[in-house]
Length: 423
Image (cartoon, rainbow, N blue to C red; front, top):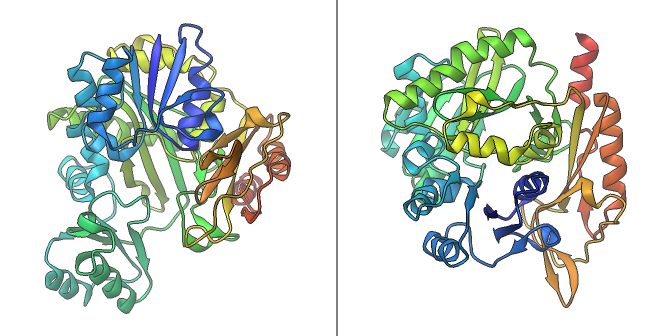
């Protein structure tokens, strides 16, 4: 089997490494991939959003199966285009990927079908939005409607901050067309939980829960990032809460998408807040999370390719999806200055002893040397019997990966350990 994986970050590296476990797969192509995964996939310099070029490559190379992981190509219809060639795909079609592609769509869906979420209003007129803010409760959350690299959400503590966020998005075009429409919603409080789920539109199989660390600095300080580390499972996500989420959120979402004629097949990501009034949806993503994937897939004991094909073929209910009861931790090594300005092009040294526990997100070859090429460079992941051991081991791995101007948060998993002690 010749398999194509669209994307080029740490998430894709984790997917590719897991797919490699299936002996039926003879070759994996990553478009564009990155040089850090070159030993496990043939990296082809075609951008993830260049749908015509992806389609031409898939046809010319006689690809048997495709996995589309990033949000942009999913929303742009990459799966639709590949399926039109007769190539089976893992990932939702464009009309289902809208659940992430439009915050207004997803909020309206939840309201229509009674899925618990924050109260909200949507706007496409700046003056109307500013008038609404005059009486909106604080703090308040301002979200760009479209995709914004995970950075289109502002939690405003003051009215001035809220007004600035709305004006930057709608008038200043901070996120381009993604901010032409916005959502203003109530601020929810409680532990956050990420749950990825396989679904073929008929069955829903949640994966191990995880806890992300979005802020750049220790103690959840600094700017929002794409994620500075994750742990799994999330100690706040008890079996009772998991069952409540299944009945009140997961299955109703699947049914709602079916009712709208937008059947979702692929990985549906639920960003949840465990409030005093019960679990509520903060956001949906139409794909594997990053870096959640780097702790969830290492705990998957079933064969990933088998599960993916079952999703594509509508056979998920007949397929075993089994996870280890161990714990995992991923520590992200980033370029100093990320998510703001940072330097790149520094030699990246990943010792062979830890190579299989490192997922490379941003690297390229320059004059025969692997060098840094991004903000987030590598995810260092450890699996262990206990969460404490997984955290300790992940940091040991991180200490062995070297590049100039490297930095990481030093408190990944500490909140989870505290929660476990309190239970």
